[in-house]
Image (cartoon, rainbow, N blue to C red; front, top):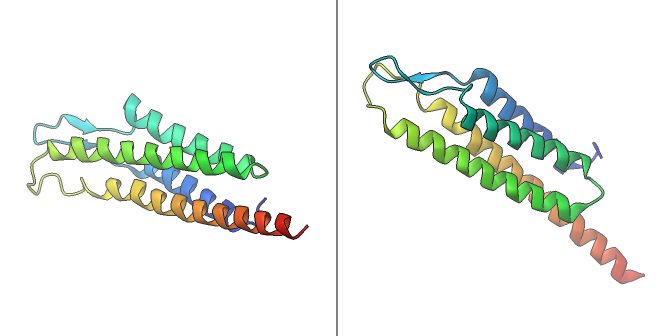
Amino acid sequence: MLQRIQTVYLIVSALIMGALYIWFPAVRNEAGVAVIERSEPLVFGLIFVSIALVVVSILSFKKRQLQFVLNRLNIILNFVLLGVFVYRSLSLSGETLVSEKGIGVLFPVISIVFLVLANKAIKRDEDLVKSVDRLR
């Protein structure tokens, strides 16, 4: 389980999403009203479900097809989270009062990259198993 490279990619993805929850700043507009907060139910739910999908995917290491599907679902979920961040940050002005509004948007993108790498490694494992079965 841990000796496979896709498990390492999935663990890195889970750590990135955990870091997103821990270090994500509360983005506020000029009036001081919070536009995006980590305790917001939508943002918290998307991050928590993403981490849960990664954990379930790691634990289902014997079922490669299920792992592949869970990772694809997680990629879609991260795109939704990215869309929420972009939609909410577009409502902010670009003044210097809100200088840190773009750093939290990068974490779902990095997580998507690691999920794609994990899917490529799972596909490679599946092709290897199919080639060995052909030789029997």
